[in-house]
Length: 255
Image 1: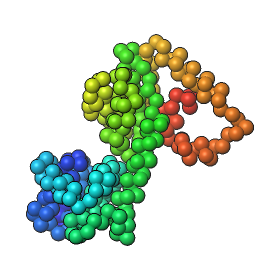
Image 2: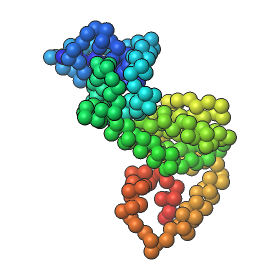
Image 3: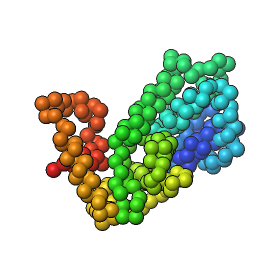
């Protein structure tokens, strides 16, 4: 069996898939380089990301499936689930081996898996759009920390750029240690290094704007005032706002 390692990027994955066809590998597993484990029984190969090879695979897929299916494929990749690379490869293999479009063939386990995974990632994206809370720093930057289950920051760019077009903002994923930064013109991916406490949103008062604490108190008071105790439905509340998001929600910090 061949273990084909790649750099963890979507372009890198498409490159690896191209090379499976190029070198005619038959029994192969694609693994991110940082997760690869030594196995003396496997033939280990390394794939280097190549935009030309990746583009050829992407253009080939565009001839076989719709744009919606391509977006679904990318979102499934962002799930970062263990073994997702092999699932995506099997999906691509099925697409290329079929004369007709297979994107709605849910009798195929890989097509169904990609669809279900895409649904999970999109659900997490919508939750982040609803639950992210910005805090204003002293230099006028709106800063938010999140910890999504899946790598959804790339999917949030358009939403927040359109909604907060007149503000500089930074959204930081404390799990994956990177963020997206908007400078009033473009959104860029940035790598950041924080202490453990800062990365979790604790003890950041020193960098906040002097009015930020007042804004947070007003928001907490508003949340408390509109919360009707007699109509409290904890089960429904947790369904729409899972507890794991609470530590980043201003309204949940009411003492």
